[in-house]
Length: 336
Ligand code: GDP
Image 1 (cartoon, helix red, strand yellow):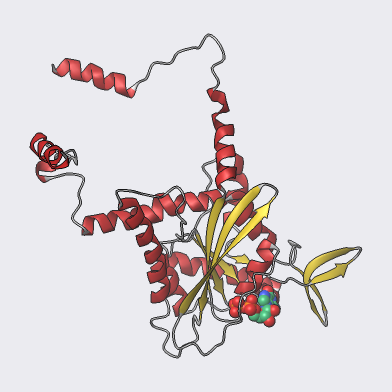
Image 2: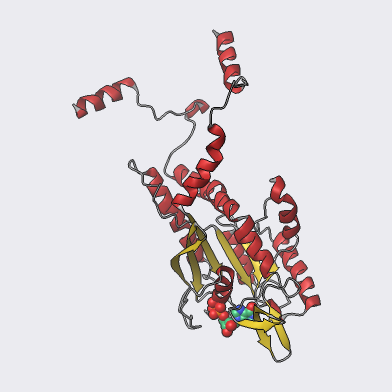
């Protein structure tokens, strides 16, 4: 009997490889996936964390090349709030449901101790909503509006000094819940040499304090090289602007000063293009995947354990949800 089980196990692990005598058609599976995804559309949720006036709304407008009509926030909010707005965007035939969540009043209170708690709660609430949907008997995950945060753009003030305690505490309390991409905001206000030193200082402070930021993945051959190189440029130093200014014979997005022009899309001026490339063109799908497979998975595991669920019972035996025969008989009788 044991030998028979062993053979069965082996068969399970090693499917036999066969050659087919002709065309079958499943080579079209990737195309079917693409068609279905285009029909369904995509959803992406961005959280912007940073003090009022640091340039969050301007950068989001610049990234998506549109005016999102954000209301201007005041510096006098009694506490931190999160404001979520959802938009439908379309580029050729691809539809994107984009939610931008902005922190309102972050860092504005005299006592900043509790500034990050509303952000943590917001992220958890979105995980909880998804978990509740997943646990329903009649689930509607297919057309469920997934509000889980896929990326947190963390705006650091261009002080040239170091991270503030509030930044460290906030990033530390978010790093196991969301993919963090740190940004140096308003990078046009810091000199080139100061910026290099500032970047190095920030990265070493993040490492020393054990803050895990999102690393662009290097396990896929097609993107490994570019992603690997971009990891070395973090935190990205960004400049935002929706103003179009003439440079040569072209109109470009830029900020004009009495002494010259800062071009948003000029890689010698700032890292805006690197951010757009990494966030939107190369790694949007990875950010969505990491959110589901890593951050949500962790939330779900802890929550289910808290609720008393377990994979193994006493004596380490796998638990089964399959009802035993007497419970089955009982439920059939009730249905009859
Ligand atoms: P938010 O409150 O964080 O959303 O900040 P806003 O995007 O409303 O920007 C606040 C102010 O900073 C506005 O006057 C913007 O024009 C300005 N600003 C935005 N981005 C930049 C930037 O990259 N550099 C500089 N120097 N100013 C910026």
